[in-house]
Amino acid sequence: MSVHIMFPNFVFTREFLGKDSGIDPTMSADYFDCLKNEIDGMRKRDPVGRRVSNAGSGWQSIDGCDTNPMFVKAIRAIRRTVDDEMMPFLGLKPNTFKTHMHNSWANINDKGAYNRPHLHNGCFYSGVLYIKGDGDEGQIQFIDKDNKIAGVFPHAPKLNESFSMSPKTGDLHLFPSGLMHMVEPNPTDKDRYSISFNLNVESDNNHANFIEDNQNLHFEITSDYKLKI
Ligand SMILES: [Fe+2]
Image (cartoon, rainbow, N blue to C red):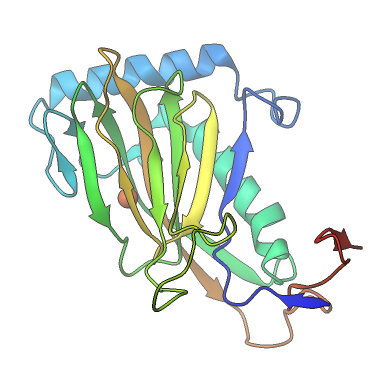
């Protein structure tokens, strides 16, 4: 039997301090510590910050992480991930497009702080890089807005309406800006630190920059429901 995966949401994850740690040695545990200290400094300089989707006692900075010298290495690592890996996976040839960091900001979510469900309107891809998190300080949850089933149906493991990811220091998640998401309240006494950002992309023409054979997700499965590759 054939299976067509239609209209998928592609969420890309890079674990700079986990399984991907060899990829970029500049993204070290020490560097993430420095970024945490820098965010503490930003909060001291601007204790009020701003309120957007954040609720409770969390703090969010104004835009500008991408122009802060401390964040140069992190922004460069994010851009490399996007330009050299994410965009080719999405079917675009390298060097036929330009990505722009539209805006970026820092977050500290302490006990009880959370982010309501929201989208990042006006952008292409968005992302979060966890600066400090052990994994139990409230998950980011991606929510499917398209009902797959209308009517009564038993729960089926492959038909989920949401997907959660734990906040772990060094993890980067890139997701479509139109993918609904929220952050669960932090149940611990530990502060969760992250930076968030939006990306825009500009293409130098329209179709010549496509990579062939990278358009459809179509699998064959065997009678025991395993993929046949
Ligand atoms: Fe968000």
